[in-house]
Length: 197
Image (tube, rainbow, N blue to C red; front, side, top):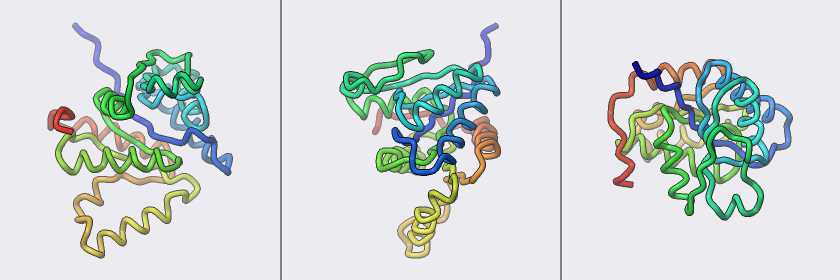
């Protein structure tokens, strides 16, 4: 009998540590939670900033880590060489598609424009029916308060329907958010169809 596949969580986060130590603390808590639960981390394969923190914490807690990184970034010595799996691809699109295919759910931690882009893309893919996986946002130290306020503004102004807005799971604490994403992932039924992207 085949072993059950572990829950696989795709984490988007900054390649910098940020100005507050709370961002690194949250990334470490996320990685530790993934590892202790026997889950798998899927992320962008970097060793710098919060990316490296969450990967190292997952590995230290006994979890497996799958990294996906374009050759150009690996060549700049930004790749993490100590992962369970490191997949080297040619383009950013290939990177994001492989990460999405290997994940059962997605969560964004604090980060910059790359993290924003990844979050909004996978959230859009969910709305358009390319996948049925839960999407989360960890709002550490109120980092995303401004963005969340703006997103509510898009709803009241008629550009984003409430149903789409409610697809995003938000919490300020890692453990309850990750557990909620894992529970929601169990009820996902629609097959992925990233080939249409």
